Amino acid sequence: MNQALSSRQRVEAALAAAGIAIDVRTFPAGTRTAADAAAAIGCAVAEIAKSIVLRAPESDRVVVVVTSGSNRVDEARVAALLGEPVARADADFVRRKTGFAIGGVAPVGHLEPPAVLIDRDLLGYDQVWAAAGSGDSVFCLTPTELLALTGAPVADVKLEQ
Image 1 (cartoon, one colour):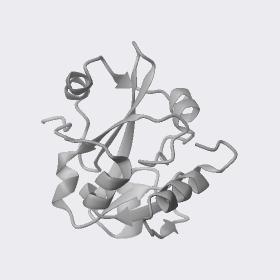
Image 2 (cartoon, rainbow, N blue to C red):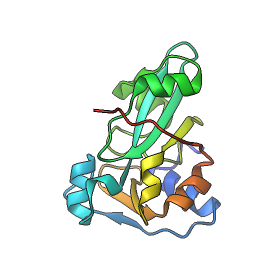
Image 3 (cartoon, one colour):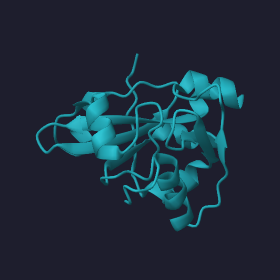
């Protein structure tokens, strides 16, 4: 992915390359958290497709779990699916490997291609909202479009409470 483009431009380029006409919306109050995004958009927190970045320390691989905004990711489940341990990535790793700051990580447009998993719970919504590369921009798409865009498998990644 082109590092000369801004984070948002990389997301818009990835959407255009996939032939998905999506309107990126900006909310000056910010959309850094699922709760902030839901409040700005006027949707349920569960309809936010938040991208959680994990690190597979043994391979230094980037793992992005796109999960429902109301869910927490079960790292043990993700590790079992990938066949290697994972841990939460720190802000430096996220920025260096994805090109995004935490709070603006999109499901596409990463500097380094990540392993991606899609939370099964997102399939229960007509539409979901994902970060568009910055802490104040999002885009809306259907779960089917999200799957086509990422090419990622659907998985049960939710931490049971």
